[in-house]
Image (cartoon, rainbow, N blue to C red; front, side):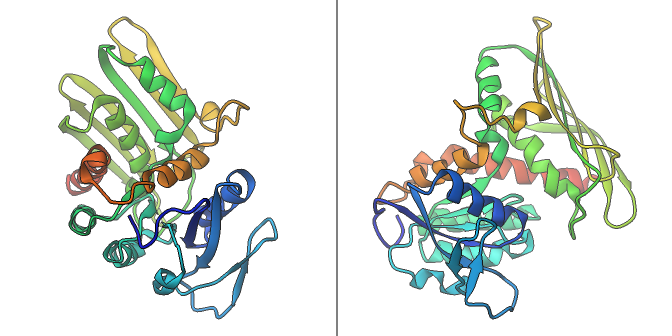
Length: 304
């Protein structure tokens, strides 16, 4: 896969130097420097700097976003630019057959999601999406504990007082909740909307209160950036009256025995590129999950 076989080091470029672009850079520098090499950084601004200096003081060559394919032995690209740019950048590198990891939200509408996934299959070029909670060790343990359990209800809350984006917080926060819910219940399940409420504030602040069901399982979701405090909580209720909880204070666990979720996510991207050729059958479940998440977001948005 890609233009060159994977070398000893996984050679990547990162597009975007905002908060999440910096998170990727810092994670590689602190935890993955023996396995991953950042060979270039791209920014979408028109500043003419030749180099970019990370928060840790390391310098990287700045390369125009559509010139990264000229870098020898490039194994993958992380796209952490604003989501409005994802279709243009992702499609460009899919056609170049360079594996990409796209930060969430993958897109801001289902049409673009479907287009990019189909383009990836057509050109046999890998896409991974940064639904980071799926790589959290605590969440993975919770999901494993739910195997063969009879679930009756899920409450999922992800909200804060900000941040303010130039797109709806439904698409900013929603991928987290839906990725975890569908990861637990299965992406083949159909979600039926029961009630959707949207409360709008100033400066693109919103509350979304969503009630839905999958088969007989009731799901309550609260997301948005119009709340007075921050919360990340997932509660799964089972027939045996046991409640499984995944909450904010263990999302960021950095236990000695655990890698950080972002480190796990980058490693997953790295290992996913190790085959010489893309074979859809190995990534079919990933693609179906991505499609389900963004189709559901689109349905929620259009229900208002």
